[in-house]
Image (cartoon, protein in one colour):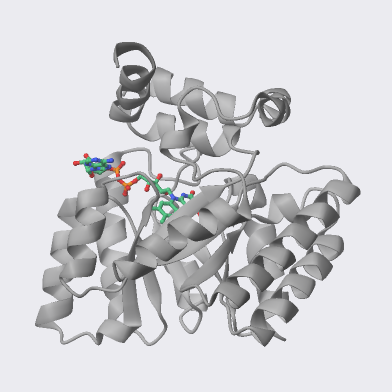
Length: 303
Ligand code: FAD
């Protein structure tokens, strides 16, 4: 994908007007390939199916860029009710949340209170909550919020993006915290992030290996089979305990590989987004890979 096309989709993903409009459209543009419905019932059915295949899940009740307190409180309540449903269904499933959905752009302390309410319920049910990492303008604040939450809760972690030069230092500071490692999905300036793919991939491998040799749990979030194969070999050579890591992929991507890894006995977790606020998430997926655009166009126009 050319940089121009990538920038085009990333630009769309950040467009607040389109993000708001899309909530009213219902699913369109082929978003249902990558987003598992709008209701809790439908997404939990999907979770159950995957659990039967030995795959655990992390649910993202989609939402970001919230600037209205009432909307952030509604998001908080929906997430708490989702936790209750996960508990009642006894699903093998944790949560992924975005802090801008819970008021980070309104007021940091308000966002912290919302996260505390979520973590209180989650810890009563023994459910882990991961804070997705958003663009760099929210990075420092996300880590600050995490540090506050870690003072009272141990069922919370976050995501570190290997396109950032500072990723290694941040991982060192978070060496006892559960982390998902990813390459990074946003358009960032060369001042903070590696501009070329090879450097990002090399940093991913280097940091993933450091994490595997450390003590805390790591989710390896990638669809890249080169990286997955190298890490599988590394884990075997170094007798890394299976309980220390899992592979994670997004719902709708490389289903064969997802099933294969689970069948081979690796801990595997599928990240499942659902809900009406699908636009930003979907545009970032189109930005990542030209084939995703082709897949969607093929379904829309050629079937
Ligand atoms: P890429 O670098 O896109 O691809 C590398 C190679 O892998 C390709 O050349 C191809 O050979 C192969 N490949 C990749 N995808 C496919 C496919 N669909 N079919 C066939 N081959 C393929 N980003 C954030 O910034 N914050 C987050 O919180 C965040 N959470 C994430 C959670 C999960 C579970 C995952 C998987 C990703 C998350 N991301 C997040 C997105 C991530 O940062 C990357 O943008 C995204 O995963 C693309 O990078 P990649 O490593 O999967 O592979």
